[in-house]
Image 1 (cartoon, one colour):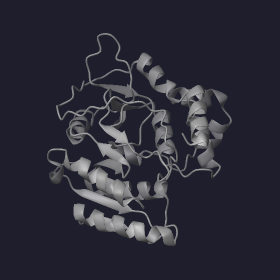
Image 2: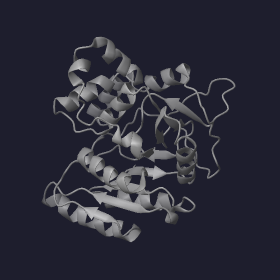
Image 3: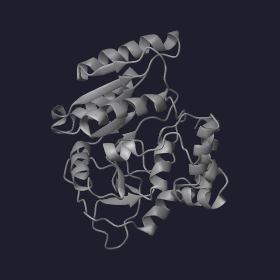
Image 4: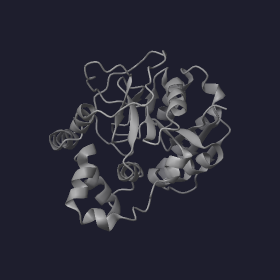
Length: 293
């Protein structure tokens, strides 16, 4: 059986429709079990939109779960992915503001099969930053110390190893050495986790990344991204800005990617990835957000 696809939606019917269209551009998408989880409305204004999202979701699959209350994205993803993982042992996870390239599902299936027994690999990511390949580097993918939540997959054993409560928070909070090490994945890593612990965000992704860091594992990313993120704009739930600091080179071909078994991490690639999360780029991004440009 093909890997199940888990989709999370909320109050943007147009976004879910575009995601569905891009999913259908992938050969064999109908062979994948599809589960859609729709978060509940926050207020009266959301009710009509979420009802429309549910209607569209049922056109794609009968496996639609619509919440009566607003849980927030973090809680919805943890509950939904856990449910599907328990049944299937692996899952491909999507949010409704993503556009998939035609080779996305083929890449995901190939990578899930090839790296299932590679204990260093924590997740497979469809989103890849614009990274320069080192000279003589033949693979179409690279290892990164920071996972991406924009179109990804993993296996049940990795998912079940995540410490959602961050039980060693006091150790991290009191260790600048650990904080600097965590921030090798980007200067914003520790701050995002601190904000979660202090109740300023509800991110599931930063806790997933922290467990990856604590276990010394990596995520797989393509040099040419198989996912485009539309989640920047006034209708976005978590990224209300037009500008994104994340640059990508899209892979719009359905051709098979060259995956390398036993792939090794490259400090050069990891440094390039971290630059997208540098203090300077984050400040520039914040200025543009404030100016709404």
